[in-house]
Image (cartoon, rainbow, N blue to C red; front, top):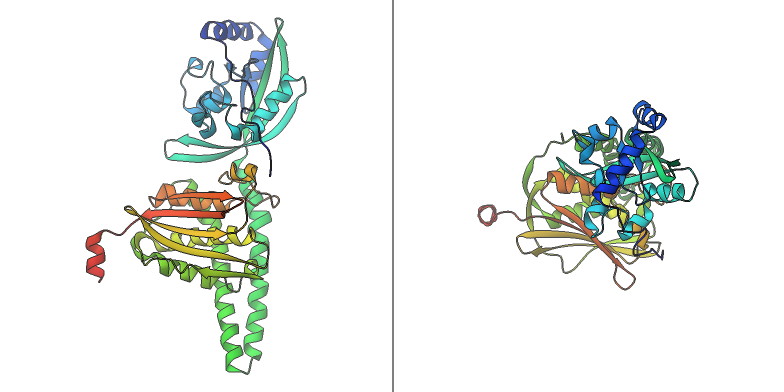
Length: 387
């Protein structure tokens, strides 16, 4: 398991007067101001305590600030409203998860005298709730008036990350599913025994569904991030959705050598949600669990009532490394290569922004890993009417 420092960088800051003095020092250096204002990306100057002492208009526009004074003295994560900075008592750079931040790594490298470019994946607060941004961050050391600073250039590379997802994750799956459908169709036409025809037809239907789901993923991602995803809530059996999800995966390559089981403790629970998006979230939860379970192994699904909500859960026996746990919901984060890392991000985005739900997990060596989707229960009146 990865070992992470509890406080990745010093928490000390300088006061408002010192920040103003440093800001004036930057203003007096005309070449630096020209560089900031000419940069086509967000650019800021940080002091040794990683606080902003200068920033260009791209930074202010991105965060909705109207004047430089609104960001002076803040650290980059606080400017961008990073969740890790919000959750840390001492702000940006002091949360345990900050030890994995590309922006912080670049800044610390710059302070050691080395220019550095890294990728920063950030979960931040916005007007629509939580959102993820992908930034390419370049940090360069700067000395002015006997003081040491860092120039930080930050570019939003979200479009590039989505393009890698399409190229490296979706297109190969589409080609593979198309080939499987062609082979299954040929096998179906050649099958003579009724049992063989039935099994082949079921496999063909499951593969066609997987193809359609893969095609739908990119559109779903685009609409969800734009806040335009359409939702059609209706009363739905949580247990029925779990059973359907398990059946859809029985022919998937990710399930080879693994069992998919419905827990004997699973309860009959009715929820009000969008059935299609519920299936998509469960599919991603199940895929994560299967990929985290080396064969031979089992993945278990279940559901239960918890207060006024229903909890649908997927469990596998593996433990996620701590560094993976800290980044699992970040867009584009993956240990499996470029173009991956959208499954957990998308299921959390859709559940929490559109379905009134939450997605969480617990992962330990003793208990394994369990992802939980919490959704509103169907009102009692609707349950009685349905009966």
